[in-house]
Amino acid sequence: MKKITKFLFLSASLLMPLEASRGSAFANQMVHSRSLVDTLNVGLEDTVHIGFFPGDIMMEVYRAPGDLSLYGVAVDVHQWNTDGTFPNLKVEVYRSSAAGYPFTSAGWMYDFGVMGENGWIGYAHPVDNDSIAYPDVSSAADLIWNNFSAGAGVCTAAPEEVNGQPVWGTKVLPVGNDVMIPRPSDGSAGLFYVDFTSSSQFAKDEYIAVVVTYLADGAGDPANEATIIDLNAGDASYIFPAPGLMYYGSGCSGPSGEHGWYIMNYAWKFQYVVNIFGDIPPDIEVYHVGMSTTTGLPDPIPPYEDVLVQALVNDTNPAGGQEGVEIVGLHWQRNSLTADTNSVAMQVAYNLVIQQYVFGRRIDGYGNGTTVYWWISAMDVEGNISTTNKQSYIIGTLATDNDVTPYEFDLHGNYPNPFNPVTNIIYSMGTASDVTIMVHNIQGQLVKNLFIGNVKPGQHTVSWNGTNNFAQSVPSGIYIYSVKSNQQILVGKMMLLK
Image (cartoon, rainbow, N blue to C red; front, top):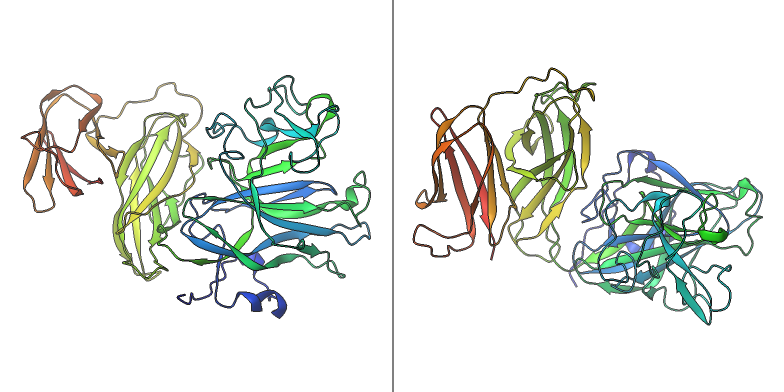
């Protein structure tokens, strides 16, 4: 086994010494947090405190960035209970599957908007008594699953999710006795690592479900707010699927007062002690968002002003293969998470201040009241792709009166990118013009004439199916496309993967 250098990624507020007994077992492992590579990357610029009571259970799904062995998990406690008792947190790891969250019983993932206390997905109960709630059908004998097929919870008027089902899969850790995080005698908060004494293997892109239970044994009365234990979490509103779930939230219950699982719009700040065996996607860190390289976003953001997005992107390969970033893309949608996507390749430049290469590109300016959802993707030289969570901003005010339509010629990139077999090149014209669109290979040789003709003002799309002028399929690789108007030529880069 190749020895992996140990990394500990903590936010500034969490830098604290670890007890030797907590850290010594992990000397040769990497510690993954959600600031490192995670295909459910949260970012977690903000922090909130999620409180839960004795008997509550919470779960987080983490998508493995590469083939890995999981050895331990760290739970970030913001504040322990203050009622004088010394309870325990039980930590378990489950192998998620199509028979549990994030998949419905119909086989698809839950809709993007199913989050917070609207996202009820059910609970287990005895066959002859639906007023007693259990977290899962495996919690006791003779249980069946209630998917809230009728009725609505008291939290909202929204109906419960159809096709809800048990959220757990197969328990893989710990093997044998339960593993606990006991409340320290002095009540000190921070990161608490649990060593499972054994490991479990997960394949790349497999979902890992970490479950934390606030054990009622040894705890105080749940009706007493002093029994609350607060955990650090961050807003995960634009992650799909949502990583956070909770069972028996004290302020919310299902039909007829039963308690069940619901999808949270938060992700807990867990950390995962792992050995990575396979290549992992690039690590993307948003470096700066603003009107220029030195100014941030004003309030309000001026209409029709481009917004600069910069990112740090690095690629590592614990498996010992080739390292390197192939292409980084900036993507955005207007006013809807299901709207057409604009995509452009980000350009790289060396930043003398931070002594690193920075990828940057601008998002087009739009009119007052426009909401822009944006994210970044990156692909390494071995074809691994990572994507940040979606973020958003609103331009100007909600008023749209007296907006002046800009007249400009602009290239909005191609989507999808990378692609197979078809991609769409998107551009806009401020005035009518003759337009020529061509595709060249990286040696500069003409591959295909996509379009020649006169184009009216507005946004336009031209598709390319990866063939040349002789209708023959071209090989995988990077291709350059150009859009030429009467006065200007705009150029973009795209990658064909087969």
